[in-house]
Structure formats: structure tokens, C-alpha cells
Length: 444
Image (cartoon, rainbow, N blue to C red; front, side):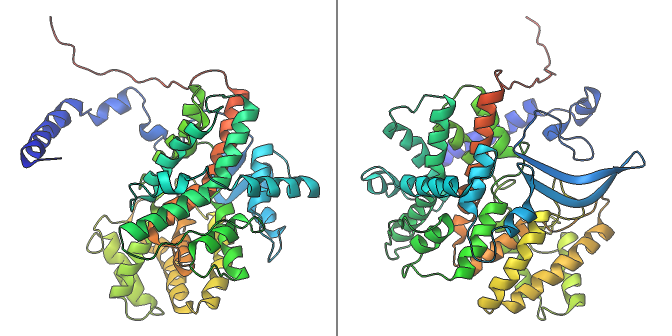
């Protein structure tokens, strides 16, 4: 237990750490170190090769790099074409997961077999929900899930076998189990901490991943086709995004050390829960709530622009000068995931009678890039990213904010798994970047 005296001690030692750990910014330039493994234009330092996905945000014209509309490819397929191929009602999460894991689209039999495998694996060990998930529940669903992932290793007789086939088995089991770990963790928190009703629905083997999430989350188990389709699309769009994002790079780093699947995925979870990575949609929702409190007419662009300007100038909201959901580390002119998602969001907003809220989002999407361009010195365009709408979607689906980052994890576990398998197959060296020591040497 932290006493006042102990707290004072740690505050005092923080000042000591800050004094001795501070590194002069000029040294990074002197030694050519790219902070965050990114150059001055935000481009990532090349750290590896992958065949799993591809992101395009620029093209070469007349020998110069020029920003272009963003493109996202899964195993050689444009994400737009892949999602459109599923049609208006068919769920595509499982088929896309097969594509990312195996490197090719399944035929009808392979798809049916894989869907059955996912269904068969969507179960937890006996009494696991009671003995693990319901013990020490927390509003931090990501921490609860991470604890569960590490505990699942105790139930696996081949937990430390890092062979490709065994790792593939473990990854598919975790992909199947993640919805249960997330939903049950939330219900345990909702019951014990919020004093609400306890709901534990078993997954339905006939339902897809998106359908099971909605069914297990809701007391009446009911959902519409539109709701399931929108959630399925959200999961596909969040499933994979190259090897350079923080949690996927973590996956590859830990895999390269020879660690087991459960430890590797737990490390990726710890990365994803960081607010600079997986919590962006929560900040968007907080910002939108603040905007609703201060903007009277959602159709008045002048009023909206005036308030967005106040946000940029650090006069209101969290006073950090950021319009959340705008801009991306890679994309400039557009985020292809946001473009795809927007149509589904509009369809769901109509079904939920949330057209006015959608109108506000549309106006911010139009105005924010213009205001950011006016107020900030930027080297590339600014456009909305996928997180701009994802929180709004989860809100319309009745998914609580405590689960937002967990929903990201339910999708991204597929990408992590694909990168783990690729790392096991292709790499035989531990990832070990260099750090230049700039310490002051003490005399004996």
C-alpha cells in the first residue's frame, strides 16, 4: 500500500531520474538517431520484410515522392475489393483470417473447414471463466485479457513448443478465444464493480465471430444483419496494418527471441493498450462528447469550425491542440479503411436514427483538415483515419467504452499471428537494434 511518505520518496527520486536520464536533443541529430525509428518526415526506418500486407501512401512522379490516396493490401488483395467480394450480408472475418494466416484465399471446402475449426476452438478450459476471468475483475479489460492469455498457457501441454504447426494451432485457438476473453471480462467487471446483472452466454457454433460478439454481449442475444455486417467490417479493417506498427513489431521482436505464443501475444496486448496505439477511438469519443456540449447546431459549419479552431489553439477540451481521429503516421491524403468504413457507418446510423450525429462527424471530417492545414506546419496532407468513426460505430452497437481497445485486439490478433508465423519461418536471428551510449564516464 502506497503511504504518503512513500509517495514523497518516489516523487523525490523522479527528479533524480529526470536529471540523470535526460539526453540532449542535439545528440540525436549528431549521431543520426531517428527517434521513434522514424525520420524527420515520419517515415519508418526499414527493419524487415513481409509478404502479409502492404500500405501505400505515396508514389514517385518525375523522380519526386508525391502523396496519394492511401491503399491497403492483404496478401496481394486490395482491401476494398476483398470486402466488396463478400457481398452485402455475408461475414468475411473468418475468410480474411485464413487469407492472412495461410497467404492465399481458401476454396469453399477450405473456408468451411476453417470456419468449423474457429467454432470448435471457441471454448475455454473447464471453470476458466469462473476461476480466472471472474477473479479480480477490472475496468481495464486489456489487462484482464492479458492475464487470461498467460494463464491459458498453463492449460496447454505444448505451451513452449515454438514449431510452426504448433504455433499456428495456438494462434488459431487464441483468435477463436479472444471474443470470449473480452466479453466475459467486461461482464465480470460490470457485475462486480458496477453492481449490474451478470450475463454469461455461451458462443453459438453456428454464428460468425462478429455475430457471437453481439450475441454474447447482449442480454437478449439479439442483433440485426446490419449490426453484424458493420462489426464484421470493422474487425476486418483493424485486422492487419503492416509489420511496423508498435504491437506487430513487438510481436516480431518477442517471437525472434524464441519465446512462446502466449508470452508473445501478451506482449503485443501490452503494446496495444498504450493510448498512443490502441486507444485513439476513445479519445475521439471524448472529443466528440465535448463538441456536442459546445456546438448547438450540428449543421452550422461556421460554429463547428470556430470550436475546432479553439481545440487546435489549446483553448478547450484537453488543451493539447489535437483534433483526434485526424491524421495518420503513414497515410496523408486518405486512409482507405476510413473510406470503406464510412459507407457502413452511414447505413448503421440510419438504422439507429443517429443521422444528426453522423452529420456532425461528416462536417468535422470536412472542416478539420482545412483548419489543421491553416494552423499547423505540415509536410503532408491530413485526413480522417479509421479511428475517427470506429468509436461512433461501437457506441451505436452498444459496445461499452471499456471494450473499445479490446475490440481492436480481437481483430489485430489475426495480424499478430500471421507475423509470428512469418517471423518463425523466415528469421533466425534475434532482433537487436543498437543504442549509442552517451553516458558521462566517472573517474575511479
